[in-house]
Image 1: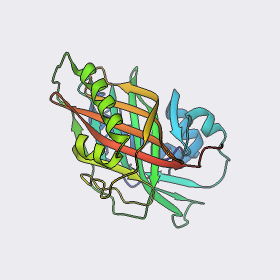
Image 2: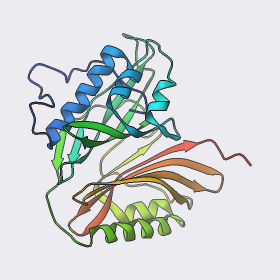
Image 3: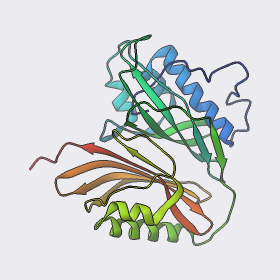
Image 4: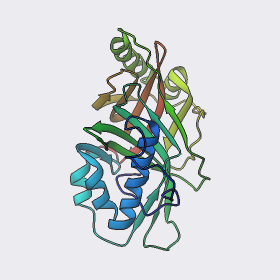
Length: 272
């Protein structure tokens, strides 16, 4: 998505699971919640759908990080439509934290050709008996074919040192990124790493091709599943005059933490 989004989708068909029909803590329930979110946007418009689905402290990117409710209330009411659907969903073993990602497109009015496309990444948290969006970000890129939905439920693998090893992994990653962020990503990448970059199609398992200029990361927020196997952090990535909003999802694989998703959205240079 991108802090904006979508109409009725072909996925909202007779026979598709609804949040009430799927086990609450399952990937199917998260996928159903994502589709319901998209369908709601098709009926009432993007801002109203986001206001109904975001947590009160949700973060969206425009491309800078903003409170989701404030950002959506500032959106003009128009005929534009943002459409999306999940193609990959995974849920922490504790069933309280999940991610959903897939393609989106934006049309200036219903029936028009898409004027922008890309991939979204949404982080969902279970609040009571309802899944709500804690963070939503998207990267624009040329059109690419949508993939069939795949889901993943992380298996419970207790590790008393998981929190400490996550903190160490983040510290080591950030130190390595000061020299070369691309090399840091290659070192900590999960096998299905997804890189969200403006102008570049998304492909699971694709590593950065070229060395990157050194960058520091200034953390602005984090969230961790109760099972300590799925972790989120966001903030600013800065190197020289370049600044980007950055979002990372880390997944614990056994006793090793890996980067599963890395998002970078360029920001205007900082004012002197």
